[in-house]
Length: 431
Image 1 (cartoon, rainbow, N blue to C red):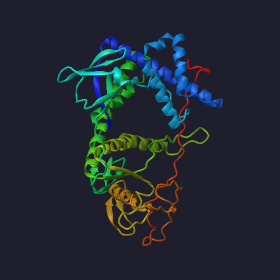
Image 2 (cartoon, rainbow, N blue to C red; image 1 turned 90 degrees about the horizontal axis):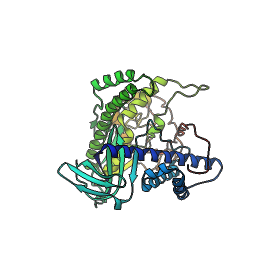
Image 3 (cartoon, rainbow, N blue to C red; image 1 turned 60 degrees about the vertical axis):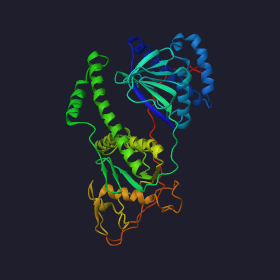
Image 4 (cartoon, rainbow, N blue to C red; image 1 turned 180 degrees about the vertical axis):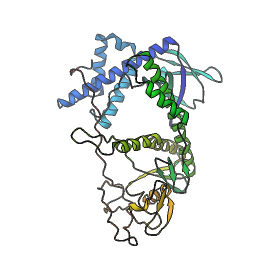
């Protein structure tokens, strides 16, 4: 099983400057190669990884600064770009901005990576053109190294080893089935009634962050602005680490106890799209939508899903995704569907059978039940992608519409077009 091991590096000033240079070169190669792919696509042609690697070798003779970075890191950058364009398309993949992108590069050849332990708390790794670099031995490596990725976060450098630990995923987990509902007030609610949540930022840090945001209204490029932005990043880095820790612990608890975890198939990127609209068609309730987007992103719905997928490899737990349509409006006791039953964020009171439940727990029970129905309301299998159909309106409070359980086909929303940055004059060469 391939796992990741992350450690904090202790660069010398010369090594830190060299690592920054490697990152800048890799960013330039990424942006130039991406622009080249877009130019080819506009002309109706195609260029792939092999041809770009060949042109990169020729470009090194004309641009000596390309030779500052190891060849394997530049080739790995082109390989990552090729994988991203194959999966998402050349016009959807984003540029690497000099202001927002955190420097990172990868050494894919395990033969050129040597890891040694120096003491109980220290180790060192030998990397091409960087030499021996010390790092904090915070946990055992636990296997054979396959690759190493160097990244910078908040002024500190880290190395992430891809390790083969020799373990295999169990065939199956004997535990029961549980439904998990992700919310904006409570992060996770299970069908068994457990609620998982924690604050990721303290009140003092929130006040400090708001105060620093006001100080950040300074002249662009000034030293004061740079210092304030660094302090803002330090606060949010702590928030991000708390969120990752919460996701890891919650995923570990769920996968250790349950054999199948059922989630809603949520399109987080579409759900958190801006509602500002355009000048011709301005959006509606922009402030409310902005608050909802921030609440969704703060809970980290996508991060919890990734943590569950990673933890399930250790236990053999199955991660099942179901259609999220009407899970919060359906009564888990009688199956009636009515939006009026959802009285508030935390209270669900069915207007048909008068049962009162926690709204998130009720939704989690519906999510769990949806995984057991193979045929949807459209008559196709749950794995299909049929169009969403509104359930019939209830004739009276005693005769509500039946639950739309098992519907696994909610038509995907249109993907948000990524913002295309201004490009330089097109050229057929990589540089």
